[in-house]
Length: 261
Image (cartoon, one colour):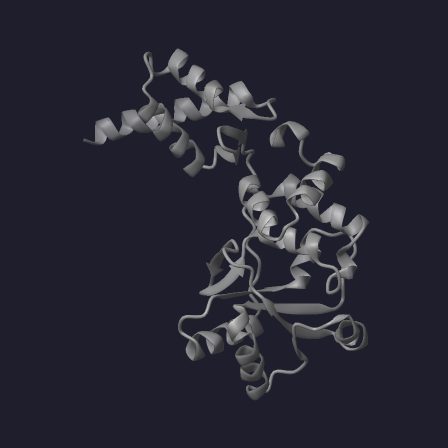
């Protein structure tokens, strides 16, 4: 059994090496390209079921990533972003979980963006994103638990007069349905793709990261970290910013137009 396992592992490594060497200079990889490579080098008379399985394995192994249906991109060796969860963030998460067992929520700190930007913002906003029907309850829960500088879905005047003057604030905003979220240290946090889209869409809370800083953030993230383009575009669609973010990525030479054709 172990010998068979070794043979299969060796075959998977050969396929990975062949995929990387063949498509290392390609902007996109089409399904038919993978079919021809596998048929010519590994599976004569390749069956559809085998192709589907091999594409699944390549994606799960972080060798390729979906751009759209039938189109992929070689995933270069990049870092997986794992931000530091603050003690305040952990305390708030435990408080919410203990109070509302079924709530969908996530949290993140705006100072995480300092990892990608040139200039470092000295103020921090801890975003608590919660389902709309729970926002008011979460707001009062934090106030009753003696948290300071807590704001519920603030308007521009509150941002200008209060939040912008605070060293640290807690802002409760609505969670977009089907947002890409995962967990670190039992704390639900947004995927990096969601953070990028949210910063791009923000019109009032993250002004420190606009203009050249926004461009710098996107360039740094795409250069250094693993990004699931399909996830980013799907979430931008939920935020009704798909066209705008595609235009931004293409015009600033972060991604090529062919990826979206």
